[in-house]
Amino acid sequence: MAEFKINLDNTEDEIRTAGYWYGHVPEERKYRRVSSFKMHEMGLKSENIRMVKDFDELRSHPPNIIVAEALRNVTFIQNFFKEQILKKKVKYVMGLGVYQQLHKSIHNKRSLLKPSKPEFANVYKPYRGQSLEGGKSLLVFRTGGIGDLLFIQPNLVYLKKKYPDCIIRFACGPQYQAMVENWDCIDEMLDLPFTLSKLIQSDYHILFEGVIERCKLAHSENAYNLFSRWIGLDLPDELLIPQQEPKWDLVEEVEEVLDDWGLAKKDYIVMQLRASSPIRTPSPEFFGELMKKLTARGHNIVITDSPRNAEQIDDFIKTYAGSSDKIYNFASHSKSLDYTIALTYHSKCVCATDSALNHIAASMEIPCFSFCGPFPGFIRLKTYPKADWIEGVLPCAPCFLHGSRPCPKAGKDGISPCYNEINKDEAIEKIEELLKR
Image (cartoon, rainbow, N blue to C red):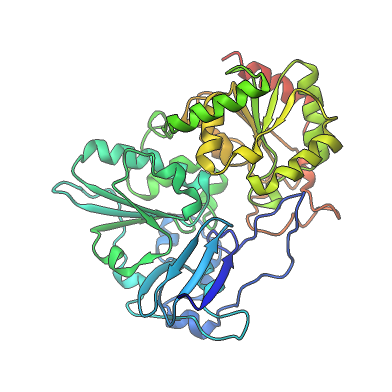
């Protein structure tokens, strides 16, 4: 029986809490900080989180990845998804942010994890384009979200075609596995964190810690190009497009929902109103006005989100979108990520803030349109043949800020001001031109 239960915030290279304009973003981080002494015990230094200019400098610092031993059974949940258990006396590999949240009980300050040998840097065998002939194995892991995982996928497709007998293990948060488990290039799916034994038994390791978050190259180059160069492949743009199919049984379920609504296939736009960070989430007024303009031009709109936010989406439609009979709330039907993938498969276009839904659409050759604020559109969407975007123009944009806190220049509403500068009429013209491609 697990002794401690902990709910993890959504985590990337740094701790962050998913922020929604219709929800609560806690100011106080619900994790225990790790002292400089503990960082030293793990073979890390606090300066490892600073920005670097290029890959050579990034590689000169140990990744912020921890090997930790569970002192007792610990149950935790990532992003409201499913319970995972770290078993007593077993060693696990995890990001520094996850360790910060799990290593001590919030109730009685009792230690739950401890740093363990070997240090990650001493067992890390980075893949840099080496041959995988003879059944060599790769362990690939990324602590980011859906978009980050799709940035990786084209490289794994390429490697599996070049080395059919290689073994590719892929570790990510369980909340994303509904998408990844459908990729033909993956041989074994692992929860993140995973056991140290899985790391040691793999010939090479691929991780992307800091490639986007801490490297200045990410301010001027597309994420797909960066990820491919980081692992020594540097594939051309035409190969850097993720490929996936929906789960066909879920496609049939979605068809039944569309039939109930009287919606035809390819006769609606899928919209996602929030990103995983408040800094990339426009205001409800922004989306409400946009939807009024789109529906006035005859477009049907289906909004997707998780079921726990279904009521908030209903409130948004009533309050900001005029309760239009051309706007539909899919949130209660999207029981996991693969339901939204099936919904997207039948759509004529996706329109979203700078978020994962754009990449999901592109992976199935569905046109995608993005509203960009802190990040310019080309660093995310350049490789996609059916993509376009519009950016908010302010002297401070793009700022390339990551993390869970709102923009420093935001008002009381916490909304990044660059989104308020987006011309909605221009955006709609671009969307309708995109639909003609």
